[in-house]
Amino acid sequence: MVEKAGIAPQNDAAGGRAKPPVARRFIKAIKNNYTGWLFIMPTVLGILLFTLYPMLASLFYSFFDYNIVSPPQSFGLQNYIKPFTDGWPEFGKSLQVTFVFSLISIPLNMVLSFALALMLNQKAKGMRFFRLLYYLPVIIPGVVSGLLWKDIMQPSGGIMNALFELVGLPKSNFFLDKNTALPTLIFTGLFGLGGGMILWIAALKNISPDLYEAADIEGANPFVKLFAITIPMCSPVIFYNLITGVIGALQTFGGVYVLTGGGGGVDNSLLFYVMNIYNQAFSSRLAMGYASALSWILFFIIGILTFIMFKTSRWVYYGGE
Amino acid sequence: MRELAISVDASAIRRRARIRKRIAATVKYFFLILFSLFFLFPFFVMLTRAVMTNADVLHRNPVYIFPHEIHWQNFVRAWDAQMISNLVNTLIIEACQVIGVPFTAALCAFGFSKVRFRFRETLFAFVLSTMMLPGICTQIPLYVTYVKIQWINTLLPFTVTAFFGGGAVNIFLIRQFMRGIPHEMDEAAKIDGANTFMIFWRIVLPMCLPVIVLIMVQTFMGTWNDFMGPLLYLRDDRVETLALGVYNRFSGAASVDSYANVQMAVGLYMMLPCAVIFFIFQKQLIDGIQLGAVKG
View 1 (spheres, rainbow over the protein chains, first blue to last red):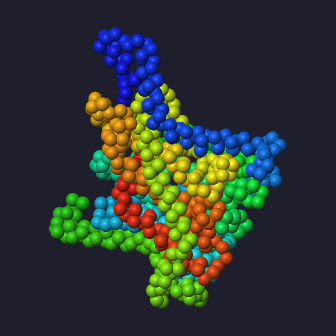
View 2 (view 1 turned 30 degrees about the vertical axis):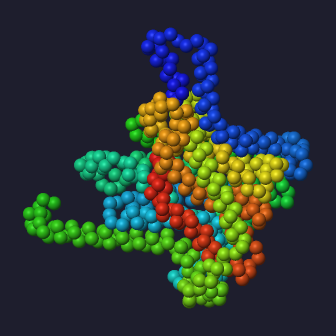
View 3 (view 1 turned 90 degrees about the vertical axis):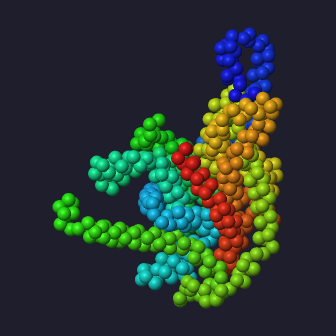
């Protein structure tokens, strides 16, 4: 049964034996297919029920006013117009917060984790140990990390301000000030650098040492080697990190929810896009239609960004393939 | 260089090179240790705060960075009845997820790598394409559906779905692994009269154990940390999971039992399983993360 359906006809032709009757081949084909279909059935059913159906349902809701309690009402584009009219203060703010956060934190995390990986990729004593140690903060559960940073960054009684005082820096309100909330969040994100670092190290290990030997013979200095060999050879991982980073950053939610207690923070300075959707859907308004439209706009934004990144990915070097 | 070598004897050059090397190494380890302090900072704060007395943790001017006495009592205060109920709920979900997700993903990957059938490639592309979808697009309508079929405030959105899906990334990883298993293996079993499911269950699945273990561990961690799902679907403290329970416990008005010392003790409890699993499976986990990026 296995690997047979596609091969069998060829064998028959090559062996010159009589082909089985058409009916038998037909039954056999169904039998083969149904084995395969059975194996993938749970997944396909799951996708149909828990992904595709909800996607279509949300597309449907997005054209109605819908609050679960009463059936969908007044069909129209109102939910797609609202973000740019009545909903603009929140929608615009959420776009701004999300994009500013993404534009700063993605490149910052990529560059710094790359630098860490370069440092830890050397052959020296204790590197395995340091790698493990730098990765460690990644395993702190999101909720715990939210509580922890909320406590560390308390304006009075928090350890960060105590440390600031020790080194003579002025006190800060961190998450509780509209100007410092986002920078503070980006800073706390740096403790997750180990995750990116691990990926870079894998990419660095994949580079053939021959390239560096050749460069040494040519007398290339470390900078030339970095920009002419290391970075181009890592470009597939740069691309992977970029895509997953963008998709992840645009969907920031859980960690911030713990910090703000479910709102957008002071002056909505931490009103991320998904937080806005959540608030619209699950506040007393239960604006499911509007929240669905916002989700589809996000889907559209992610789709466009991913498309642009793939279209402009000619700088990615895929080896000899 | 050559002129220098003639004027200075070889041992001096070697000595100078050795000194330069040692300085470079010292600088390097200085920075390595400095960065270690940075990455250990969250753990330092958790551990010190968790053993502080109420008075220590509330002290202002100065704020205490180190505890004055080690106060283990917080770990007892942290462990209340609600936490046990949360843990039980989390473990029920974990059991379903850790078994269901890799099993479903392996079934699907077997179908896509070892069984030929019509529309295989189309269906595979369809399964993979779900990887790109933002979770929030499905979560709102799923909430509506769960309200209608009365799954809100039950564990069903987390236990039943574990057996449907498996996750596109997992399916992709297992499929890559299965494609590396030579066909002679399952051909031989077939000649011995094994049916396709037997080949899957007795031969191919055991050979995929490394990647299955990886997915089990990743699923465990993901489920343990999942916050958004429980936040949406579990709105009753009898059914809430640990992640949600810990949040709810400390999000209300401050009380004696919600001071930072108790918070951090609870946090350490919650981190403990992740830390243990990470240290046991660190090699598989790190290899797995790297596999995803380099292959993907």
